[in-house]
Figure: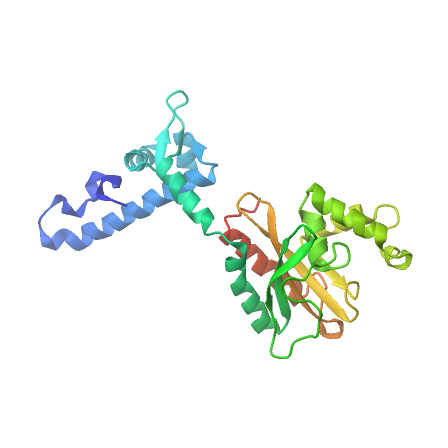
Length: 280
């Protein structure tokens, strides 16, 4: 932040005495931190708020917050609406947000999560996105002793029988996703359809995934293989990718309170936050 964006009393150049410089430098840093607190508070209130609401949110007096708002307005980071007197994010803040969103690539942000899961749990893991034909693997990591599976980067997964597909089905409420699931259900053999709820097979899957916040399968997509999938949300709250870990059923715990489920959900949430997602 430039000098113009700081309260005048915090400017270390206001006095030439070298003995006072360290103290005034600390004051300048504190002023910058307070300014950023005010700016972030405004963003977390939806980008628009009254002085009273903003001051209450950041835990400072209205007079103090007002001083910092004036400095932020001078820098173009905040603006004030004349009719309502409310403060809102300014053009410079929008430029910052747009630049950040351009860097919010779920594949780039999710890759470290794959490495951590592979190393901490010794599991095969991947990231998938929703393609025209279904969930498609775009990043893939294997442990030193990989589980033999016939999926790789570019593989399209089942909507109904894979954990990845079920995560998209349950948490991405879009017509093409529903249509892919219905088409797959119509083509499934009777014995496979019998594994699902008879009255409302797709609806039951969706409700199950939403309640758990993730999807799990055991021997439904690949015999002898179990998997856990959790969603990555973007800044709008939309599911933009799914993080999946899988392993041999005999040694792979898919229970809700198990270590694998907890780790996958934790990594997916951390990646979502890095993408700008704010949990409700």
